View 1: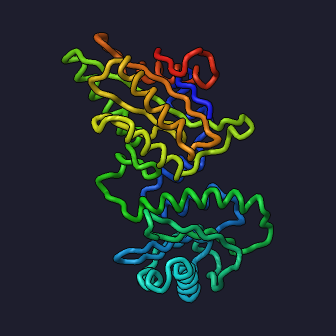
View 2: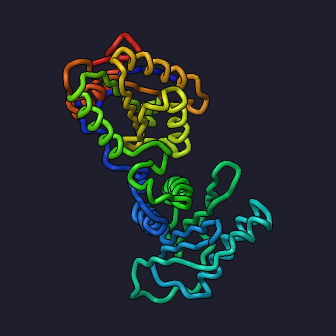
View 3: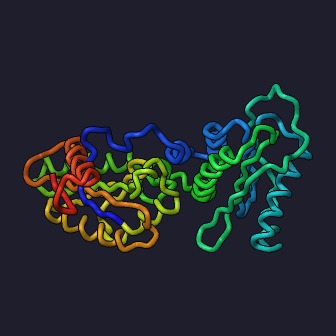
Amino acid sequence: MSFPMDASLGAEPLGDARPQDRLEMLSAATDVLELLRRADAITPPEIDLWAALVVGENPTMYVHCPMPPSATATVALADSMRTELCDYGGEALGAVAHAEQVRLSCASLNEEVMTGLTDAYRDHLTQRGDQAVALTRAAATNARGLTLDRWREAEETLEVAAWMLGSLAVADARGQGIVDAISGVYTRSFFEEMLHNELVRHARRASEVAVILLQLRRSSPALAEVQPAPALLAFVAEVIKDALRLSDVVARVASRQFAVLMPETSPRGGLIAANRLGEALRDANELDGWSIDIGVSGVGLEVAGSHELLKQAEKAMRAAERRRTKHPFVYV
């Protein structure tokens, strides 16, 4: 795995250069029905029914479909998904997954009522540890026009939606806007607020602050557009947290980028920490086929704005990506 260590956010705004991708679209959902609607919006029109069966104290069925389903069709859908859970975890899991309520969202209320189910569907199990917490389904109410490519595109979205569902199923309202549902670290908005506050303190009392930016990139240019899976992003987030201090603020700031705020840390200290972080990631088998680009910036006695710090770090990161340095890390 190649391991340049100079990432950058300079010439482009904070985040990836490409348009907002499927992971970013889905990770912005704040509840299960919104997640299903977003999944439907970014997948081929042939895949038009999305459902989620959430297991817990109050098992609940969520359905987004093109037309209003009849009560019989809704019950049949819930039973079908519960059967899938039984096949995975046995009758005990099937018993606690018996949904007593359903929440519906329809693309149009003016269509005829949907009375039957289709055999054209894909399911994805959501787990937290060894525990199954939900099942997500993507289906086509009319299988005509379906192709393998369309299913492949839908399955990529299904994987992300299922991961998101695990976070939304146990959502804490206090964490909305603060904790990223994909990776489990902080959100970009929370990171920017923390960085701003740190620089305000710096203006009152001279101190040192370091910022690290890290991006995942496919090692093969032919796979440059392939997005990291949610599980991989969560793994990288955990490695970053384990490699750094509890006082450091770790956030996912774009679909494949992370940022770290290190209070009371000199730029040189940030460089040392970034090197330690890079080594930890380089040795991870989970990142086979991926490269890591890392950039470091910081302030000493001079006051620098948050935008300037991030721009410096991004310059370094992009330089690492382009291999414009002899060293694995670049401090700008």
